[in-house]
Structures are given as C-alpha cells and as structure tokens.
Image (cartoon, rainbow, N blue to C red; front, side, top):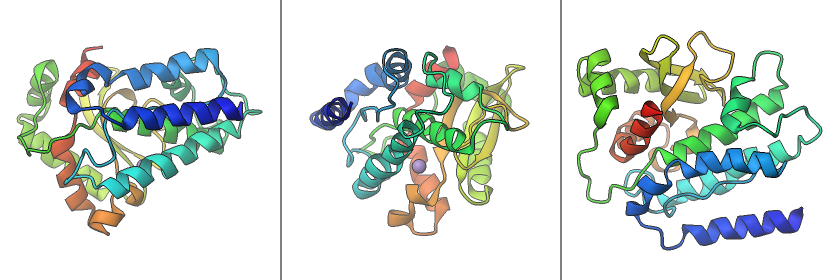
Length: 246
Ligand code: MN
C-alpha cells in the first residue's frame, strides 16, 4: 500500500509540470469524478492532482500558500482519513454521496477529514489562472440565475463577500442551489459543507471559498477582505456553470 501511495504522490507531482490554463476546462471536474472512481476500486483516499502549478494563480494566490495549502493542509486531511480505515466509511460511494450521509451522529474525525478532503478537491477545480487580470464573471445559465436571484453580479459579489468576511472563525462560504431550486449564499463552520445533514440550508454546491486563515495568512496576514477580493479574479466560472447545469 505504501508503494502505491508513493507512486500516486509522484504521479500527482509530475502532473503539475507543464500543464497550462487551457487544459482546465477539460480537466476541471475530472478531479472530483476520480474521487468516486478511486473509492470504488481502492479503500485509500489520495490527493488529487492540481490542474495548474502552485504559482499559476499569482498574483492573487501566492505560490508558497498554494504549495503549503495543498501539500500540508489538504494532504493532512487525506492522511487522517486513511488512518480512519477501521471507521465505518462506505468506500463504494463517491465522496459527494459520502458527504450527504454525514449527520450529527457521524464521528467528528470522519466529518472533519472527509469534509476537508472533499471541500479542498472542489475548491482547487473552481480556481483558474488569470495572469493578465482579465475581468472574471459568471457565464451561461448560472449568470442568468445569479442576475435573477441577486439582481446583478455586483450585488451577488457584495453579499457573498460580506458573508465570507463575517463568518466567525474557520469555515467556508458557498453558493448553492437549495431543494427549491433557489440560489443561496450560505456559510458552514470548520470543514462542514451544505451537502451534509447539518445546517438549515442544504443543496447542490456551485461555488465555495475557503476562509480558513491557512488559505491567506502568509500573503494577506489577518486581512481576509483582501484575500476575498483577490479570489474573485481567479474563480473558474466554466466549472461553476458545469456544476450548475448538472
Ligand atoms: Mn483550506
């Protein structure tokens, strides 16, 4: 097993070399789908490949933060999940389905580390390089839905940023489609997400922002507002549109 894990880690690192931003639209959801495939064939969780290099999101997300976030924080959730092998995890289902089964009775270590692994895997796919600083806005059906629900993209942006900024402590801010088909901006503490049977608002995930300090402290220190502002430039709206249309 350890040989296999070493091989997978090396493969992941090799995959970071030479990928360019034009591959993202093809690869954006493969990472998530591969989690499901992996779960069906292998009981060990592995870190999924980033679709860009650590420095590719500069100047918005810095290289050092990306490397530590991915190789230490995300890897940490994966390692802890694998250490929980005796716990009752249904390995036959996708990680998305595993998340929907989490409720208040779930072991805290499973909830935190499965959430951490799933949330980060999604987060990486919903980022894309924007080295030229081109205006970055939602597209297609999602763009129409955002305008219908929030009047304008700018109003949506203000509301999302405000909720992300005001979330106390560590957690995530999300755009979801709830069970009535309505777009909602919700926050969850720690590594919870709105797929889990925990909060008042549950639904399909369209967009997520990690507001743990580990995501921004090196570059932005305590200024979460600056980190949120930077993030709007590198959202992968093609990936959000795909999730929304699914
Ligand atoms: Mn994180």
